[in-house]
Length: 100
Image (tube, rainbow, N blue to C red):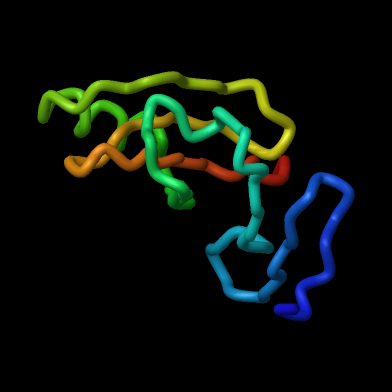
């Protein structure tokens, strides 16, 4: 209905050309039975692209924000997950950079 071409992984890549930014943003719907947003009970999750995941995780930890999980080995980059003050899961993504 939205005119987004769905990919085999179940979402859509919204491509754009902006210097210094990832080549695409993602929109993805999850099945109602998915537990991907756990421990949040929300029906959604926000994903932010960040420039320096290590620095952001250090700042969050210093402020007492618990890091739910961290993954540095995904083919699309590095990730960390937190809960916002309202209990919504937030995904932090540092896109993989092309080798110089």
